[in-house]
Length: 96
Image (spheres, rainbow, N blue to C red):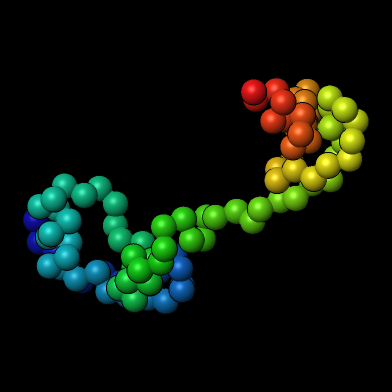
C-alpha cells in the first residue's frame, strides 16, 4: 500500500496540519485504526496539562436543611431527591 501526505483539520484549534506518508505508515504498522485528531502543537499542549485539568468540577456549596434535626446547613454537593442530607453534627453522630 502506498501512502501519500494528507491534510487534516485539528479538532482543538481548527487549523490544518499534514499527516505525512511516514506517519501513516507508522500508524498502519502499529495497526492504529483512527487518524490523528490534533496538530503537533495542540497534542503537546494536551500532553503537558495536569491530569483532570479541564475536566475538574468546581466545588458546589448548597444551603439546605438537615433531614435529621431540621437545622439549616451548607453541604459541598447538590442534594438529590430521596436521599437524606445531614448537617455535620448529625453526620458525625450517625457515623459513630
